[in-house]
Image 1 (cartoon, rainbow, N blue to C red):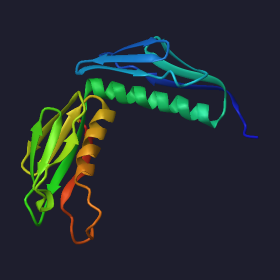
Image 2: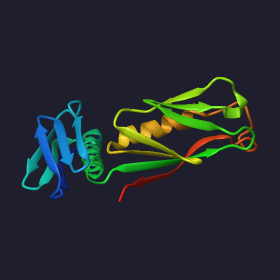
Image 3: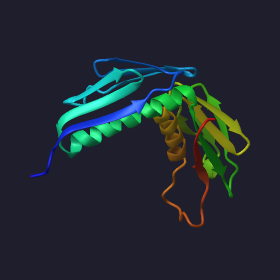
Length: 183
C-alpha cells in the first residue's frame, strides 16, 4: 500500500497588480492584459482558497494523485498570473526548399498554400483570444492563455506535418522554434 501524507499544502504569492477571485473551485485572475477563468471542479477532495495575498491549495490524506493535482492547480494559476501580467509568445519558422510556401491569416484560420506544390490549401485553426502575425518567414503567435497560444502553434505545425517523405532530406514545413514570456 502506498503511504499517504496527512496534510498537503501548496501556496502561491499573488502580485500586487493582479486580482484573484475564487468561487468554489472556479478561479478568476484579472490583470493589465485581460482576464482568465479556469474551473477546477474535477479536483476532488482539494480546496482552493485565498488568504491575505496568497492562493492556498490544500488536501488531507493525500495519495500521489492528490499531491500531483494540488501542484498542477498551483501551476495553472501561476500560468494564468503570468498571462494576465505579461503574456505568452510562440515563434514559428516557415521552411521550404522545393516550393515556396505562402501563408495568410483569414479571421480564425491560417491558410497555407503551395505547400509541397499542392493545389489545395491547408488550414490551421486559430483559437479565440490569440493574435497571429506573419513577418517574412516567421509566424508570431501571442496571447494571455498559454494553453490557447500553445494549441494554436501546434495546429499550425501539425497542418504541415508530412509522413510520406524522408524527414532527413525533405524538411519543408512550419516549425515552432521559440517559446517565451513577453517582457
